[in-house]
Each structure stands twice: as C-alpha cells, then as structure tokens.
Length: 244
Image 1 (cartoon, rainbow, N blue to C red):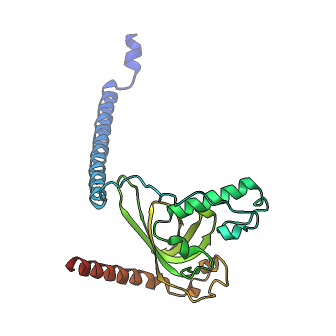
Image 2 (image 1 turned 135 degrees about the horizontal axis):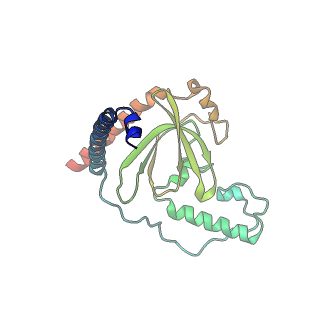
Image 3 (image 1 turned 120 degrees about the horizontal axis):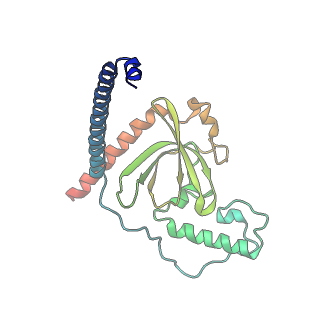
C-alpha cells in the first residue's frame, strides 16, 4: 500500500492545483454574483421608472348599458348591413341571432364613436392609407400610455372582433401593429391625415405599401413630425382650457 502511494504523482502538487482551482472558481462566482446584483439593481430602477410612468389603477371596464331589447335581424337583412363577413348560413335563425348579439356588443363597446371611422358608407369613414394615431394602455391595474402612429394598412371587418393594422418604420425597419378596434385597452383612435378618396380603390387594404413605401400619401419620415405637432397642439389646448 505504501509503495502504491509513493507511485502516485506529487499529491502536494495536485492539492495545490486543486486549491488554485477553488480560488479561480470562487473569483469567477464572485464576478458573476456581482454582475447579478448589478443587473438586479438596474432591473429595479427600470421597474421603479415604469411605476412612475404608470398612473393609478383603473376600474374594471364596463360597456355601455343596453338601450332596449335586442334587435333581431330578419331574413332580408344581409350580413353586410351588420358589417360582418358574408355567410351562406346567415338566413338561419341561430346565425341571425348571433349577428344581432354581435351588433349589440359593438354598440355597447363603442365608447367614442369609433365604429363610424371603419364603417363603409359612413360620412366619417376613413380609407386605408390614411395616417392615424392609436393610443392604448398597457394594463388596467398599472396603466401606462402607449402610442403608435402610422399608415392604416388594412381593415378586417369581423364584427366585434374587427381589427386594423397600422404600419410605420422604426430605425429603418418596417413595423406593423394590429389593434382590435373594440378592445377596452385601445383608448383612442385619432385621424391625423385622411387620404384622398379612391386611394385604396374601394378595398379594405393597401398592402402594396409594404413593397412600395414611396407610394404612401405621406412620407413615413414625416409621420413623427406630424405626431409632434399634434401633441404640441393638444398641450396648448389643454393649457387654454385650464386658464378658463
């Protein structure tokens, strides 16, 4: 046994290297621990900044109350009259009932008359290609205002599930955001510039702007300046109201 131990290479050297390894690991762990603490502090500062930007918690969203009994569409009412996609089964009673419920939900969730902006034939309707500003909140418990402005790329009419797609460029990269029109998180939809009638040729989309951004009615670079002017105008109007 003694001879076997003597045949093993320098145990002292092995111990020294093992101890050095422990010191290296300890120093690395120390660096990592310091980095984790520093990262945690940075995250806490960012979270505190977000809390400062966020306003007070909002009450749960409640749609407008009904204004009477549910109006049931009859067989002669086409789906387009309810601003819904065509359905060959729409003459069936169950589907007519669903269309009636959908129309009632859209009416109760429309708190700022935004339905008129996206209803064909409405005097206030806007065409795809117009410049709009959409404001929303991140959550109702910790609301932070988020805004995005761009070109109205398309409108998908699906009743209460209708949505719009807004496109703009951020740092030279095309960005598209889809907004449910009747979502309680969308607080405002404002038209900054209307496109000339016929720009979309009567359609619901101008998707060709993805490949041809130069064909847009307004340069994408000018949208940010338009938003700045709009914010400045609203700030001055609010100051005038406060002075009164």
